[in-house]
Length: 101
Image 1: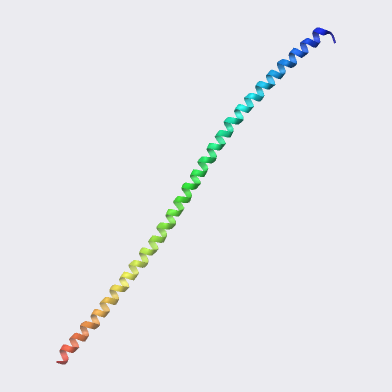
Image 2 (image 1 turned 60 degrees about the vertical axis):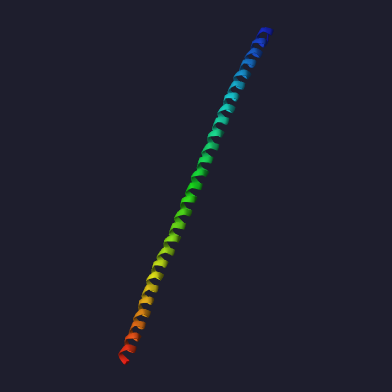
């Protein structure tokens, strides 16, 4: 191999290494961008998961309070029925007392 050919190959090797360095740099830049996008996507997914969890918690609370409300309505009706029965008994006793006089 002559000297000029060796110099040409070394110059080509230097050019090839610069091209490789440029490609590796572009890949690293792309990787940083993709990593940022993945991080953003993860953050958004976590936010959606948190929102879904809150929504499910709110639905569970609403369901619980609805059941409590229904129980209260039933209790209220029973109390009113009980009061009406007591009033009927008291009124009947008063009427019997008045009738016995």
